[in-house]
Image (cartoon, rainbow, N blue to C red; front, side):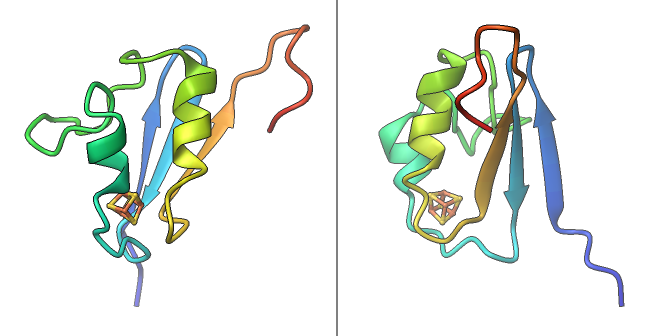
Length: 81
Ligand code: SF4
């Protein structure tokens, strides 16, 4: 069986990954940063809605690990994945 529940949302400075199978629907993402995570919108992740480092920090609070990210590093951004 193939699992097709992973999505990628590509932004200029960050790529956000969402694994629906892991999501426990805590709402932490949408409540804490509605300008980026809005279930009423498609796509529901707006990678341009906040600075990439703020989005990354907020994703770190996702309790299930459903949301992950990769910062698109430039020369001066080497301390984060
Ligand atoms: S914070 Fe994580 S677990 Fe909670 S709703 Fe968002 S993606 Fe799902």
